[in-house]
Image 1 (cartoon, rainbow, N blue to C red):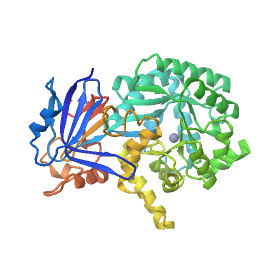
Image 2 (spheres, rainbow, N blue to C red; image 1 turned 120 degrees about the horizontal axis):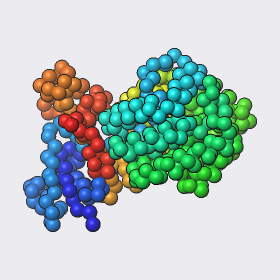
Image 3 (cartoon, rainbow, N blue to C red; image 1 turned 90 degrees about the vertical axis):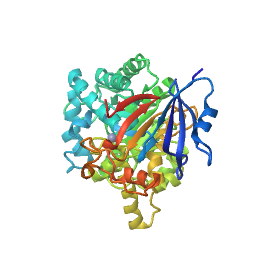
Image 4 (cartoon, helix red, strand yellow; image 1 turned 30 degrees about the vertical axis):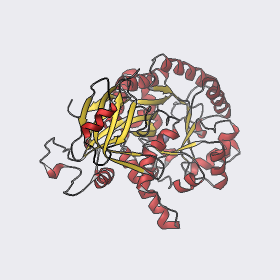
Length: 453
Ligand SMILES: [Zn+2]
């Protein structure tokens, strides 16, 4: 039986619903030796801390960590959509729309992952960067290459990030020779990939079926992936309705609107995550809701590639689960903070344009944490601080400085002033902070990043 190993005492903030954040101050959170959360409390008024702590543990002496002022303990971020091989060119080439961006930058670059040594270099850097930004769970896209994508999964295991990792499937319209030979070959390679990831023997990392998008997948391939999802009990991730030209092309290929095209091949369902879903109508949303399909909202990418603005409010109102994705390298930032800010800005633009109710700060945080976990089907394990879930968390220090000297106020990303409490600190982190404020990262109780190491 697990025993309590560490107790954190300080400001703890997490989502308890789509619209509610809990501020525990001081909060008291116990972590078991097996990495699960033992308890979460707020110190009752007029109760001495030592007296209260004595009631929580009787038969062992856990380490007590008192968190300093201007330090926040938060759930780790959940990136519901990120392309590991595209990391090298993130931040460049945002002058082209999706389809020409793919053939100009993405496909030629992804071809390079036939080299395992190149894949190793890039995957080590991008997974480390993602963890450094406080992403404790990520849904990764690899490339069409089985060995390189198994290596991506192994990198996540070794670095300790919770992850869903997918080998990209595409049997047409790849461009520049970046395409699999047939639907059959794609499925055979995918089965080999699934076996390879399962042989890693890690509970943290699971395979996910990853057809690129309807433009580059035949009906035969999509139907086979749907069958594999059933037989292997695997989730599916893909893209949908990101760009108007893409939607038109899919309709000409399938003779059905985009969402219905996926439905006709058995792709929609509670184990499926569709990225983007910008260009939908009411009946599309109704179908996604009815099939319990989830959506990854990637606002940074949507702005960068001029794809459009997703009406997240309409998705939420339809009862669809929505998480946030960075969509590197369509999006330029691996940091979910950038995604939260851009999601809020995108919703305000829609609000100014047509009166849509904008997303609240609480909803932005929810989509980056608990909502993201729900979108990936991992909310029983992670997403917020609840007894029995894994301790996937970040420690945020508002006083952290770029040059490591806490008295260099001008080099702080966030300035905190006297009298500002947990709420002001949290809001400042969300809008002004960056990864320099993330000083420790934990996944399943294990510290996977520490700024001092
Ligand atoms: Zn994407």
